[in-house]
Length: 102
Image (cartoon, rainbow, N blue to C red; front, side, top):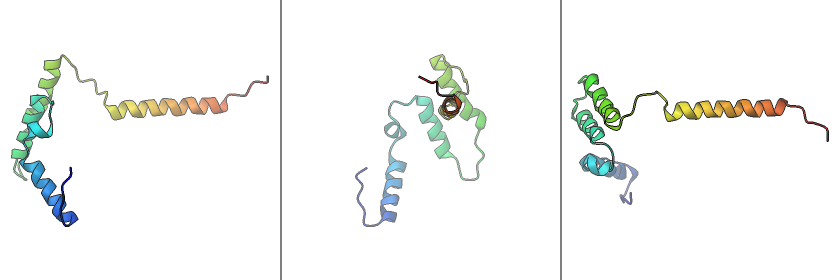
């Protein structure tokens, strides 16, 4: 970020301050407004305060509904794990396949 400070601790504190003071709209340009509202809500919580999980889910459900999407539970990490597993299986099958005489 090009932030300069005398010590690592000073730099971390300065970055924290910059992020805390920067509006979410600037931190997350192009994100749906519901994400911004979610972040504002989360930041407004007191440390011991229990979040309104239904409200949080509603923010994300609104994004899905607005875009005509459905929750399919196909997360990036699930897809990548499945692809890696399939590749490993193919590699193992390739190793076990006998080499044909030419």
